[in-house]
Image (tube, rainbow, N blue to C red; front, top):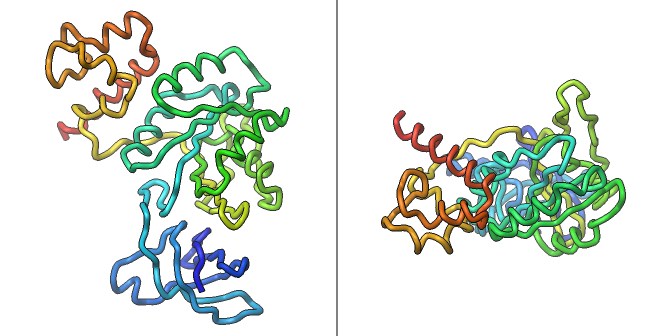
Length: 291
């Protein structure tokens, strides 16, 4: 029988099988011998050991379409990153880091801004910034039940990583999409206005036989690796149309004269916020190389 690993806890793997049942499985010793670790999202073959207790053994891991480092999952079609428009205020530097990380790993990203019932003021600005950078952007309010039908269509028939900082409403959204997930929604800390970590492990939820959502633990920082400061500009696609106006080949759009990107910035054709984040990340990556 075949199935998908939807959760892994303490050496046990929970497999959503083709018969619609969820089996608690152990991985055969040969995987340890070959230094292969099953990942959440893996398509596997399993032997059922006990039908009534829904237990089994994973006997084979099928070829992976892709695999991510963080979160450690396999065979995803897309990522959807959630940030609140307010409460907590969106950390766009953190968002940009996530977008770079997913692009590096070859995973398409959709951006979803939540809690639009709290303010409409920043929505248009956020949409302009990230649509200009080539990303699909949607806005939802779980409280007002707006934007949810469109979001569900974006998820349908795909395996999606759902990610974002704590407190932005990931668990509330999961409850809306799949009520029987019984997610703990958590309560925002009044003292620091940041969400408590309510998801402690990566877990796929089967919305239907073709739609899976991986709810991941909230993150408050992302460390970018395996990218040099010279290639960072390639992860800001809105720079590309203006690079032909740069005087120097290999221009990194910071200290050079006659830079098409900096000219576009002066003309407000590139987001100042995105450019400032680019400069911060450039310096960070440059410092990494020294050590």
